[in-house]
Image (cartoon, rainbow, N blue to C red; front, top):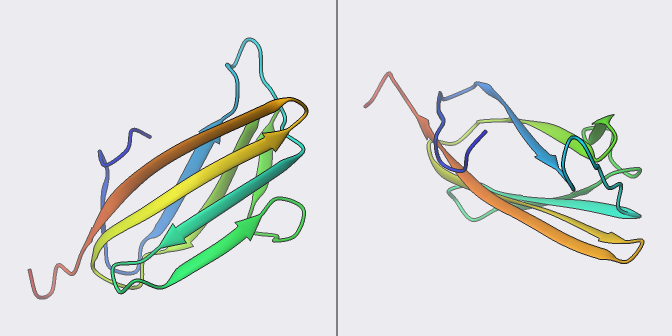
Length: 101
């Protein structure tokens, strides 16, 4: 998913994903952290191995699914570090309340 290329309806389940390294040469960081901020400014901090919502789907590939419960622009950031690397991926997605928009 490209950052900001997706729009969702209120209540949708939104899948966020990242690939550390490349598919041909994946890298699994020691720690993977995800921060998701809703349009009201509330932030959820999640980590692989500590939160069931964060899943390793393949070498170097991680995902989390969030419920789009507030309309507006959501922001997220994946951070992987350890094993000699530090990598980040940031993005956003927009949620619309079709009933009122």
